[in-house]
Image (cartoon, rainbow over all chains, first blue to last red; front, side, top):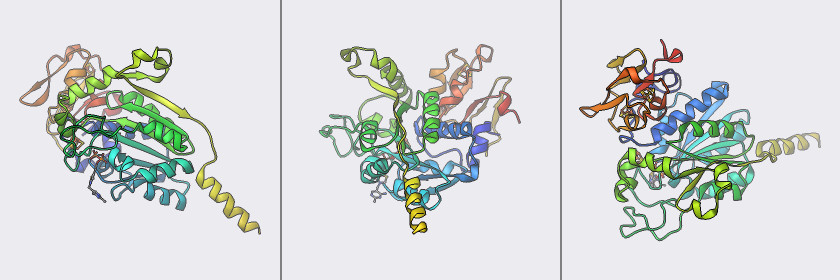
Length: 272
Length: 72
Ligand SMILES: Cc1ncc(C[n+]2csc(CCOP(=O)(O)OP(=O)(O)O)c2C)c(N)n1
Ligand code: SF4
Ligand code: SF4
Ligand code: SF4
């Protein structure tokens, strides 16, 4: 029998999963189940929605009410579910391509509306499923199938984008920092509003191989070495943060939530 | 589901699910684990402090603590 967490929250008949050896998506998927376990919610009132991509395959392994939708549209489907049944806890699993390329508009408007959805973005800096095309988070000058001489686009800072667009809970962790990731996802779920948690993953097969980043272990070592917690970073001189990236909680505020606002309209019209 | 599990006093490993990525081996603080024929293997269970780092980061759910919660 698998571990208690896996046995409880995974469709174990579908395991072993299909991801490549060392793919961070498996670590992040487990972290989501641990966060849900700790959140003590009614299992029948949770809906997990994904788009298309290696990351989005996660819903197929999770033993909840799940919806595996179309590329880029996870947040759009999730918005519909939340508006139809505001009592549900709605979680979105999406990739950097799914969420910030084809799905970028859905993302910014969900942030702006502050609709009570928790989106977990599995960011592996590439399109894994389709063979390593560069994505909006491929670092500048890094390579992809579609950028054999290096990508000249500046990459998105997903938490920065979400915070600026109006998300009320924004955070980042990595597959290596899985315990931090679990606590941030838990806090995101608790936030009544749009929460975005970026989970830095690793794709040794495409991003890793194309950019000579080594194997999965090397890529997790990199996460360990170059991540700095936001609290520590705030006390460090800017020059010592060069080449590093920040993890932790970036934004945690309270603002009116979309389905509540919508209910007010319904109630007011009923009174007329 | 697999029945090829190896149960020790502290850990359970499932070689059928293991893809030999080496993550658990590299991040185990006590060098308890190793790879043998491309799969996880226990080198020295005596040294295991049951910290759960291996279970936390195994992408394939192929290694976990036997601890209370995981007991059948
Ligand atoms: C409308 C549409 N356009 C393109 C595709 C092809 N496609 C499938 S997955 C994908 C990108 C996946 O990248 P990401 O979301 O970052 O997930 P990953 O596979 O890296 O986890 C693309 C372009 C598609 N399935 N549907
Ligand atoms: S291609 Fe990359 S993202 Fe997809 S399963 Fe393999 S390692 Fe993971
Ligand atoms: S529980 Fe900790 S000490 Fe024991 S094998 Fe796993 S990582 Fe190593
Ligand atoms: S982390 Fe999991 S899949 Fe990778 S070698 Fe260890 S047991 Fe096997």
